Every structure is written in C-alpha cells, then in structure tokens.
Image (cartoon, rainbow, N blue to C red; front, side, top):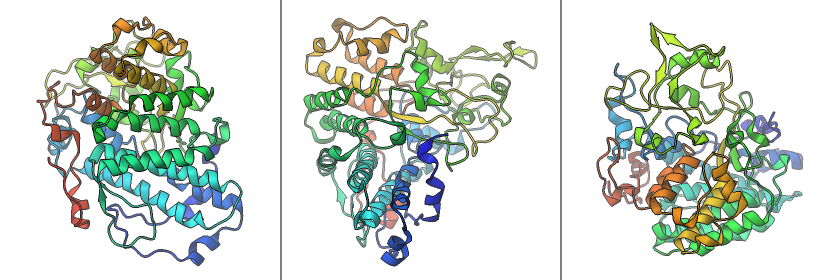
Length: 500
C-alpha cells in the first residue's frame, strides 16, 4: 500500500470545480466555506495533497503523454485491418504533424495542464493564510508542482495564459516563453531550500529537492529552444546538485524501476502514485497496447484494445543484446505455463514490422511491456499498481552527459561509474568520448527512456523534429508547437493562436 495515498480519499470531499479553459471569472468559495473546514493540521496537509492527484491522468489514452508520444517517432497508432483505431484520422493528425485545434487529444491535454495549475493556485490561496507546522515546505512543494505544469504548458504550446492568483477575475494574460522561463527558474530556485532533501517513504511521490533540481536542469536544457540562449553549464550545475544529495542510485536491474511495486526503486526521483483502490485514474497500458491474445500470457480477465504499438524504425534502434529491448514484446508469445500460444492454428507472434499503416495486421507492431503487468487485470478503471515514472536518476546523469558533450567537455564525466552502469546493466558496452555523436546520443536517450514521455522534447532539442520518419512526411518548424485548442480560444478572446 502506498502510504502517500492513504489519506487522499478525504480530499475528494474538499474538491472544487476546476475550469478547463482557464477562465478566472468563476465565483470563489468564501473563507468560511473553505478555510473553516479544517480542524487539525493533518486535515490541512491532506487537503494540500490535492494537486498531486491532478497528475494521475497524464499517461492515459487521450491525455498529454499520449499527445507527445504519438507525435514522436517512438509510438504510433495505425488503423487496423478491421477499421478500428483510425477514428477519423485524429491519431494520424498527431503522427503526421498535421495538428488541428479541434483534436480531442489536444484539447484534453491542454485541460489537464491548466486544471493542474488551477488546483495548485487554489491550494496556495486556501492554505496561504493558515498557520501550521511545515507550512513553508507544503507551500514550496505546491509552487514547484505548479511550475512543473507550466513547464509542460510552455514546452508544448509556447506562449500560454499565466496566472498565479486564484482570486484573479477575468482571463489571465498570455505570456511568452521568456517570461515563463524566467518564472520557472525563479520559482524553483526560490523555493528549493524548503523542500525535503532525502526521499524517505513518507515523501514518496512528492516534490523533493531531487525532483526540483531535476526539473530545473530540464528548464535549462530547453533554454536554447525556448529563449535562444544556451544554458548548458547551468544544466550541469543542477544535475550536480541532485548528485550531491547522495540520495539516488542506478538500479542493478533496469526493470526494477517499472515493477508492480516500484516504490522500492532507488533510482526513481519523482513518480505518479497509483493504487487500484485509492486513485480514480490509473496506468492502463496493458489495455492500450496488447492484443487480446495476450490474455493467456498474463491471465487477464479483461480484453486489451490493441492500439498503441512501437514505430518499426524505433524498435530497430535496439541492439539484439540490449536488455532494454525487453521493454517490448516481439516474437512467439507464451501462456502462463510457458507453452506457445496458438490462435486458430497460427502461432501467436508479434512482429516488429507493420505492413500497411492504414490496415495493420492483428499482431503487427511491437507491444510495450516495460511496466510489469500483473495477473488478473480486469478493466482499465481498476488497474495497474505500478507508479508512473516521471524523473529518475539515469535522466539526471544523461542530462549532465549531454550538456557536457554540448560544451565539448564530455571527457570530464564519461568515466563516471554510475553513468557507465546505465549501459552495462543493459548488457551494452560503456561509452567512450569517441562514441558520442548527436545521432548516437539521441538514439540512446530513446532506448533508455522509451515511452517515458520525453521523446518529443529530445527530438526538438536535437533538431530532428521536422525530419520525415516512418509514414510521416517532413514537417515545418511551426509543428514544434501544438495549436491552442479551439475551445480555449472560444472561451478566452485574449489568446493568440499558434501557427498550424
């Protein structure tokens, strides 16, 4: 049982209505209706946990993770031979970088981000005038969590509506990336001193110093793309701050980070905590990626939907000896007893290839098995216990390596034992400076962090986002930003649309 979640059902009683289009003109609850609810400090702290629950939908089928991944070269949802999954081409809009402001996945991703921001603003407003033990730390956690939502906002949409005041009326002004970048740096650096340093079990799934410094490193890594100024050294410094905490280590087993009970991972820095009983949203990738024939492998009760598969050229980036290749299912499949599965007289074999993008065969395309699947899964509303990994220590070490490589100083870090372990635990030789090219670094980031939600950002930073790839034509620079959803434009007349 994840201890952080034990008190969260109480939060449901205290939930506010959150507006998806970021309209600040809604009536506010009075201080009597809200602040006087709290009888103890424990109740205040439980209430303050609410913004963490706003992370839960992130890796769902039609949410931000899916938006970013489907637009990258890691993941694709082809139409099936029976017509399933084409869905008027809305997935192809993402794959082909033909984004439109009416795309449902785009709209729901925008709402996810700004509902998260509004939730943080609400909690900071409600508890700001209250006095309780640990207030500075709670406030700092929520401020940096809000910064994380704004990181997603500006990375995906560029100029975004901005407000830190829950009492503000009307519509917030649209701010450019320079403004948001400065805010992110200041907000993180101003509040990091108040955060928990060591990731003890009671702080599992919460914002800690390790999470904040990792987020800061990511902000600096994006500086050149966002504001035209390189900040590689500052990214190195932020990574060094995580390393200096001496709180994390590279796991011996890559897949320990993604097990059913992965709260024991010493590598994971920040996760979305799930529990099949205590959380309303869940990680249900088994439903999204596996074919129904895989029920025999895992003794599933429910039937998978057979949609999300690996783009064939991305799968080919894995050496046959690379243990991380086991993140994906390819080849003959076996039932729980170890016997080969045969369907209709045909061996059940997942292929890494896909013959027809508009009419994929039933077992074509590698399937994701990176997160351990538990037996007996029934339906996506009551699902996997695995916690979704947002930041891990390997991310920090590879970020430092990339930043130093861009500075021409990779030799300073290339022999670091923890860095080398990332490769050796995958049964791959450690890197030398001569191995490091832009293509190899990007490919390695793909192999190490496949389907973790960062590929779009990496491809943009390495300058390949507009390149053609599997069943995707070349795209214009404007495709580095998603259009603002039409619903948001209709609701907020002050917003200026991105080119699309």
